[in-house]
Structure formats: C-alpha cells, structure tokens
Amino acid sequence: MRVLIAPDSFKGSLSALQAAKAMAQGVLRVFPHAEIDMVPMADGGEGTVEALVNATSGTLHTHTVQDPLGRPIEAVWGMLGGGRTAVVEMAAASGLPLLHTHERDPLRACTHGTGELIATALEALHSSEVTQSDPEHTTLPRLVVGIGGSATNDGGSGALRALGAVFHDAQGAPLPPGGAALASLKGVTLANLHPLLAKTSLLVACDVDNPLCGPRGASAVFGPQKGATAQQVQQLDAALHQFAKVSASATGKDMINAPGAGAAGGLGAGLLFYTPAQLVPGVSLVLEATNFAARVAKADLVITGEGRTDSQTMYGKAPVGVAKAAKAYGKPVLCLSGALGEEANTLYSHGIDGLASVVCAIASLEECVANAHPLLCDAAERACRLIALGKTMPR
View 1 (tube, rainbow, N blue to C red):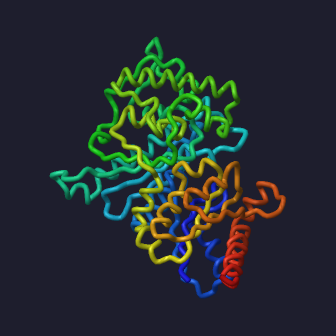
View 2: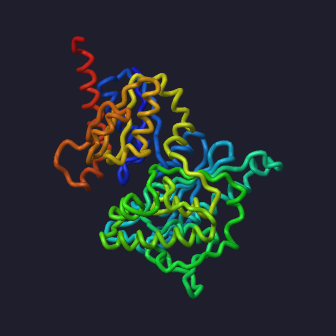
View 3: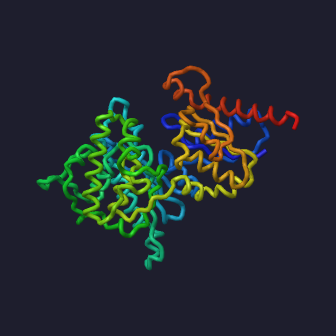
C-alpha cells in the first residue's frame, strides 16, 4: 500500500512537515508495511518558503525586519535550488500568528516588514552567481511572494513604502503606517521605487480570489479575524476604496475588483497596482515544484489536512488543490483537520472523499495546540482503522 501524505500546516501548532510526520506515524500503526511519501504543502501562506525550498533542495536565509507593529523580528526567506528563484512569505514578517490576540489591530498593523523581505530577496537574487552568469538576461530571475496569513489591512502600502514608494496626504506629508491612515491618502510618489522590481518576474502566490473592497473584500471577509469590529470593517473598507482610487490615478490600472486583490489585507492589490506582479494559485506552484503529479500517480491513498476546514477551503486552499490533483488520477483523498467548520461537507464535491476532525473530545484551544502531534497521529490511526475495516467487508 502506497500512501501519499500532503498536508498544509496546522497554524500555530504544526508545520506542514510536522503534520505529515504525525499522519505517517498514525498510518504505520495500522498499515506497518505501507510505503509513505510525505509532500508538505502550502498555498501561499505559512509554510510556502519551507515547502518550495525543500522541494528544490534550496537554502533558507534570515533577515531582521519589522513585524506588523514595527518591532524587530527575524524572518526567513528562501533561495530555490538553481539560484534563479527566490521565495518570501508575508506570514514570516506580517503574519497574524506574530501577534498576541490582544495586539491584533488592523487599523495600524503594517506590511513594512514584508517589503523589507522582498527587497532583501530581490538584491540577493540579482547578485547571485547564477544570475550574474546570464549576462544576456535570456530569462528574468523569479521572485515568488506568498501572501496568506496576514495580520494587516493596509493594501500593501507598508510593503511598498519599504520598496521606495511614498504615500502622502493632502499637505504632502507621508502617511503613518496602517490601514486606517489610507483614508487620508491623496497622492503617491514612485520616483524611488526599487529598480529591481522591473527586472524580475514577480509571482504572487495567493489562496483566495476576493476583490479589494465590498462585501467579499479584504476588510469584510478577513478583517474580523484580525481584530476588526463591525464599525472598523466599514472604516477599513472605505480606506481601501480611497487607496484604490488614488492608486488607479497614479498607475492607470483598475485593480479594485481583480480576483485576489483582497488577499492579505489588500497586499494583492498593492502589488498588482505598483509592480509587474502576476497572481497565481499558491498551491499550484507547490504542486509543480514537488512533482506532485508523478508522485500521486503511484499512490493508493492520499491524505491531506489543515488547521481548520470549512467553506473557505474550496477557494484555493491546499487540501482542495491536493484533492483535484489526486482526482486526475482517480485516487481517494482523506482530509484530517484540526476542526471542521461551517459547510465543510461541501468539499465532497471538490475531490475530498472523507473528512475527519483531529479533536474528538472537549478541549481548550491551548490543550489542542499543545497536544497537536499526538492528536493528529491518533486521528490518522482512527481513519486508517476504518479503511482497514472497509477492506474486510464483503463486496
């Protein structure tokens, strides 16, 4: 029996690789002779750097940047094998898990650290020996930016500020950081925008298709989980409308309704407005880098998972990306998740054949996080025992 294990991270508790190892342990309790192939997944959020670097035998690097509230933090980025592609994830610099619950404040949280990471990766990419050995520039170096898991709602203005843009009010004064300040935006100066952006193929790994504003926009859909009240959601949405208006005037682009513009508190829109970025499904990049198609073709069972599975999972999240790839080869897919939320059963029509929650008893979030590995291991065992039972039943 060949089992392909391809989970996303369980945010705040297990990395994708740690989750895969826990699942494998549970599988082997029931099927001790199973051949296990672990392929840690990501969809643009937390774990994207690790997944792509591991898949290509690349290297990890660290850089000191600002966290969402402006404090120094060590953030990881990666250079993929071959030296022509770098990858950063905003979760490492501007992610929600970097803040305690009482610190969440999308009115002032800022993506400046993400911009610092992008600048660092750009400069390393263009100074690498591989890039320097291609003097005719037959292909542009590539930078992948994963934009899931943000604590911010600033339209990417902080990241763009770190890359040289200046956003100012009616008096010409630079705006303070944060999403709320965008309500006062009247103009933008791009004279000092980082020159290497124009010399780089920029792929933005995105796991949602939300527009920037409105009922499906960044503020309305994702603002509450970042700490925004109902009144603040309206305030932030109006600020992003102003950001889009000024940005359209400055760039000649209309990105307010572009699919994915609302990702990461509007960072998707900011990159679309001011850089040569292309938004792509994050999970597709990881599937390609890991040679997933060839590996799933050999599998008898595929197990995926994530921290919480609900109706949002169908919109570009890793488990559905894995399931769709598996279904191309007719493979059964089991999804193990920390929690099953609203309308999780809709995923049965998106390639997932079975759903199971890791937690099977009343427990606090803190207890679940602290015991994530054994809980996930036990859940994989329970699921595999049901599979083994099914195999003994008469046809």
